[in-house]
Length: 328
Image (spheres, rainbow, N blue to C red):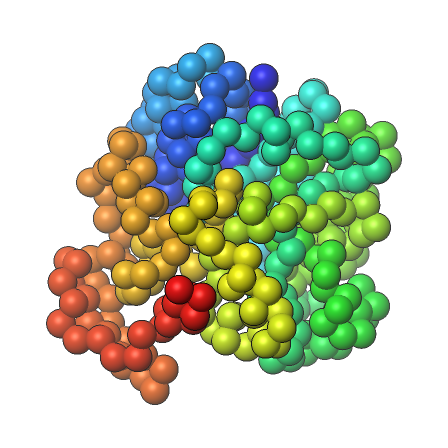
């Protein structure tokens, strides 16, 4: 039996359904831990029925309403970003895989799920986006200490001095948690304590990397591929960008695909794995759901110009996704 956790509200329910269906297409014997707030009953019923359609699959529904109301979610519109922190208390088993609701799975997870986690609290994929944030020295929002530049923020909090220090900094959207080790060392409470005294810019992701440092395992790109935003790729150093593009190979199918660049929010037709995402979506209860971005997309700037209405493109200049074509 595999434990898989997700956390979402009704805004992300249609995309969570795609994630769940992609899992069920290739896997069985799964217990889903569905953490939620602001989730409509109609969405709960749809997703519960979808989960039960899988072979020997079940769901435990966990209402997280109010649990993290005292914390700021920054630019993120929901407190669901904090939900995975509570998993050591919620799941009694020795491990669990947490997935964001913008993920698809392309194959059997059994070997990936059962990988050796001895000596590690958590495993995740390197977050190349943080390297771009650091290189640009972005201004990061703070609720308590005033805004800080990225270089100053990561120097002060993590003692990072250059981009090489981000090699073991992981993205929080796909993480395998060693629940036994987390409970033994009281990591959940240490994270709550850290939230109370540190104003993390990137919420639970920064906190995981801060509290679990030195006990973080990295996924390979074959196992977990992050579909990066175009501006992230363009700003990466050439050697890192080349390594990423060389490791990206849609034809062989990466096991887990995490859409940092959302298929339902971007106008480009060539977003990697976009067609597979919509193929899976057609097999969910939300096959007719369309986001506002899918109905109407407009931009007119020096970086891009496009107008798309109901899937019909009237004009588009400067293909933003060209960077993914460099290895074709």
